[in-house]
Length: 212
Image 1 (cartoon, rainbow, N blue to C red):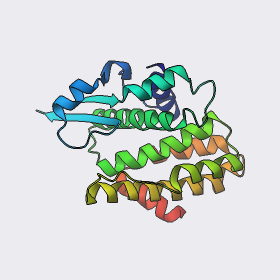
Image 2: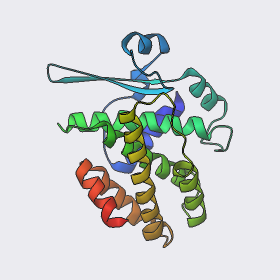
Image 3: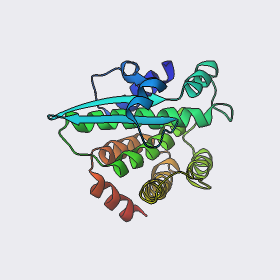
Image 4: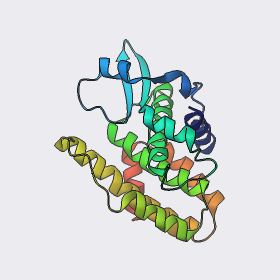
C-alpha cells in the first residue's frame, strides 16, 4: 500500500490540502466491497455512505493492482508493466482525497466532478513523476485521453459521465501544455492547478470552455 500513501501525500502537497486521514486505514478488501455494492464492481471503487450529516468513505483497489505496484514500484520506474495499475491507483486516491476535502469543506460534489478531477490528477501526477516537457506531455495526453475504451457494462449515464470527464480533461491538459509546459512555467502551472482544484464543477467546466 506504499504507493497509495505516496500518491496521497503527493496530491495533498500539490493542492495544499490536508484531509487528516491515512488512506491505508480506509482501504477495504473484496469481501467487504462486495457485501455493500450490488451494482458494478470495477477494479477501483470509492464507497461513500452519508447518514445523519456524517460521511463515511472507503476505497477498494483490486489486490492484483496493489501486488503489481508493490513488485514494480512506480517510484523507481514507470512503464508499460505498471502504468495501467498506477493510473488506477491515482484515480482511487484522487477520489478519496477530493471527496474528503469536499466533505470537510461542507461542499457537495458530483460524480462527474470526482471523475474530472481524477483524470486531471492522472495527467499531472504522471507528468511531474517523469519529465514536465512538451514531448512527454503530448505523449501522455494521447495515451490517457486519446483512444479510450470504456467498459461495456457501463449504463448510458455512466458512459456519458466518463466521456465528459475524459473530453474535458483532454482539453484542459492541452491548455496546460500550451500555456505552461511548453513555456517551462511549471511553478505557474502548479498555481493554476491549485486554483482549479478549489472551483466547483460549474467553475471547472467554465474554465475549460474558456481555455479551449
